[in-house]
Length: 278
Image 1 (tube, rainbow, N blue to C red):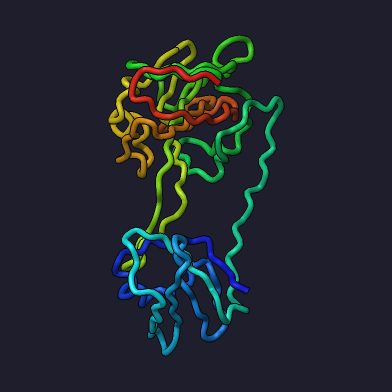
Image 2 (image 1 turned 135 degrees about the vertical axis):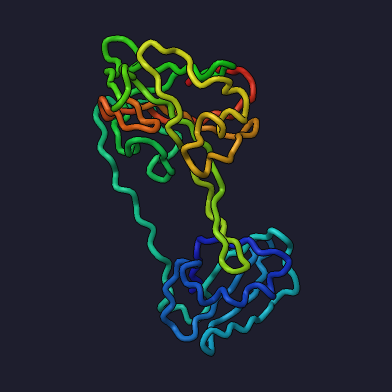
């Protein structure tokens, strides 16, 4: 039976000449090959044609080409098709469900446990106790409405170490970035991953913060630059952005009042003043 790896490989028109060292790289396919010799096949997900190769003679990797060319940027899957008794995909661990305190607020747009979070605490595990109901992009900053912002149940104030006054909450902003790594002459592409960074700390009663958040260059310059991947990324108009608020001050510090957060929402970057309601 054919066993498929979930890993996709971007291969250029130099496919036949570049694949020589791939079969020995077991981590690429997330397979543990124990059969001898294991045979792997690169199958095009566009036209279902193949090229095959195998590992023999101490690292020599002959290539049997069942096709003559590959288009630049074409996607391929690494598939074990023969002698596969000992080749099994590495299992992907299932995140442990995290208990949250009642009441449960609005649903998250995506699972924070699968995202890269840059801030002063592991907020993916915090209780989701409030819902973002209003998000406004203005030339002066973000205006966000949620029920823990004010009123009798609002989040308490806390003073970060070295600060002279208290703060109440932190605004987190993120984007989805493609990730990959090079192996010899190949480039492995993983599914896009959310990167979300603590960007703004607000005190109680502060309604707008962030400067000209309608401008794309504001994000890498003054907002999410603490995340190394986001530091060079400016959002395009229409690109999905993620927004969340957490209690306390978590940008460049770790001032925790209560371990609570809002749901995380996603909206298209408008590139101009615009309001979203949820």
